[in-house]
Length: 571
Image (cartoon, rainbow, N blue to C red; front, side, top):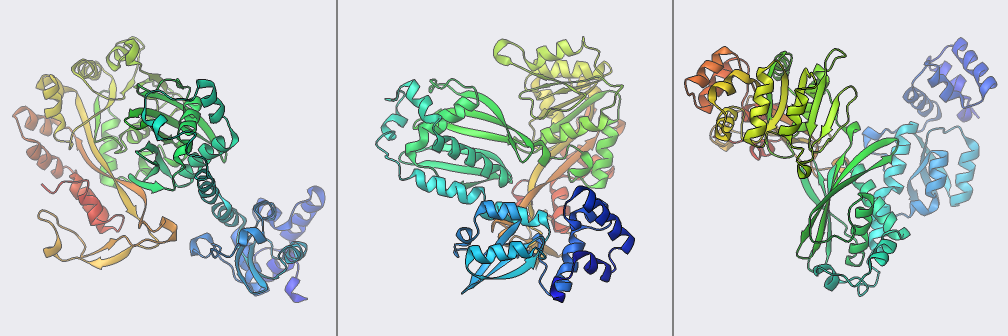
């Protein structure tokens, strides 16, 4: 039947390949085997999407993509029982819906008659076909059969455990009735190992930055921090609290018997060929130890200044500052504002084979090639200040100090910047212009501060509106807080859809305040100018305040007004 024309004939009739290209692909198929469509893609003659679209037109079936939002099975139809996970992965096929005695499935190869016949026999249903590309189907399979469903099932199963075995009494006391050997044995049992594994995998799939496991009076809470906000997840049974904590301690190489003091550790996991670092912190509370796992996934964070979301004029100021051969570059902002990411991206920018770059960090968050990274250990006296003293004897060109915490570290940082080194560090201040006052308050003389400072970047992170569901609305000047002016009257607000888990936001963007200290700004600082006056001069040279940077992103539809006002002051 015409419906089952050969793929090569279909692509030629659509004008997507030539007869010569088909002949070459068929020759390669004879030599090495494989599917014709995959060989055509490998040879660079056509893209996978073009094949799928051509098949949909010729066969009179629908083509759906991941972006369409239709590549999702209808819930509560027991589709996973009709077509099991292993079969779906092996054959790259996903059930989408069932109606009476027919089932609709999405396939990458709708010409595979044997597979269609197997589905018909397996399900006992007539098979309706739609087509998509292999990558999109595999992602949809992972979401449908994947970690969230498995995690919820494991958690629900855990709630059937006998709570008398490991109850609140043991959790809320410093001692436990369980022996150390029994705790280790329980932590290594298959259900606990699987549950901890699923908790971590699900957090990574959800793009979470942190996992919080918190014991309370009569229950256990599991929360993920996604785009800076904590969301509560289905929680395991309180009966599994001690085995879960013990399992995490074993993985993190912590003292499993120590429950009275805070502990820090970490471990690495490999998921889908990605190597992910997890930093673990244990904190004793009145009901037991709270665990926080920080997820450091380098593949998610582009260590490239051009890809971090800075406006072109901000990026120009930053590059001018970091291309200096000496001086102090400071990143300011609260914890979790992306300072480390910007610092690493800046180091990548200045890194060359001719430069000796050394960092002192606590902890070393990302490992970068061709950079000498050092983990400080204050508990044995190896502080930031001591590390800097050693660095200056190592002939460095560029130095990174993870944080300027005290006068001794600040003095060493200034000294390094004044003796021909480019120094990067972080500091906790509310905005860029207040950095000078903060350094003077620490105890540094004003003349040393102005002589060494080259660039100050204050930054915050704001959640980005989901591009699939954000809604435009018109805002009037009367509705705006005092001091807020917008370039556009039409801005966007969150709504929520399947792609953003009904949150309305997906991902984060940076808002910044960049001050490049030239001679004019340094003169203003010397005469005792206030942070407001310093910023007024900087704005004439292309800088924005945090609020102005945020409002530009609101006007461009990147984020919402409420999100910017939650992190940037209007005064």
